[in-house]
Image (tube, rainbow, N blue to C red):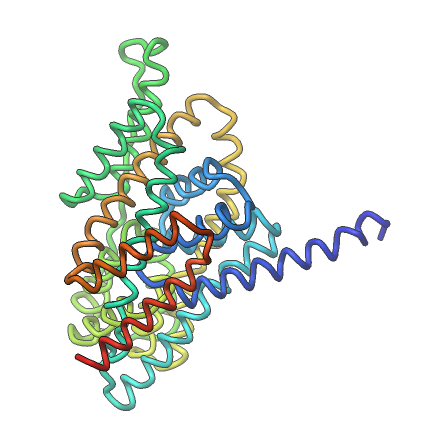
Length: 384
């Protein structure tokens, strides 16, 4: 080992510890779903720590939206790789996932043994208004960077409208990216030279065999490998595959799994942990969790070499710009839907407005704001 390697090792170790601590904390306070997680990550790695700028951050957001699986988890994995290399990739992903897996596992055990209602721990009354403020602050800041051209503004607005009326997210991304690439090359295109993009989606076949751990692993590996969209898309897929086709889960168990995904922090895909526990106890929970998240680590490892290539080629760069603008539009769509759910009275409106004012005026860590939201939620739960 030469002197340079010896001097680099402490720096790498320090960065790895920094990555682990950050994403463990984000996994604990990350209420509100993927859009909230992205906003929290942006607050930490761009605004507070300066690991990268908004432009590079948006490139990662856009690129992870193009691959299947839990996007905010994949973004965490990517940020860990950017900061601390291959080990950072693994540490960031595991740290972000672990708190939710533990929380959901405990709830699954309580549900199985004691029939505990998952909604008993619902603190969303105070937390969600804070999340609305965090997402709004991020959308405005990121919009200043990504929406800098007419085609970008059109892509963002169209994605927002399409998201709100239920157009599939992958379709919005591909159309926006293709439109931006075509617009950037409009003077060089000749008739008959427009590329055709074909999207193929596999349909799972019904099965009648029992839920062995091997079959359970294959089902969740498939979900993690091909599923695009929000947690609600995950629920629809689980209903078809595990309730309707295979009969491994009842409708009520699935509904309770959805409740757990709503009231716990971290990735929504840890719903798989709850589902796996109901099917085959702790072993089923472990297998389902590994199955649904494992593809994300592979996809991000492969994606790491593609993003620099896209940045270096004009047409690919234009495509990524369109995807970034559409991603921001969809994030704004989530903000609209979440605000409608979260702001229900004067108290929640005040909490949201106050959190937004603090974010604009200070550099206070957003985790403190979420902690304040938890206090409001507990108070409301006690009084109600």
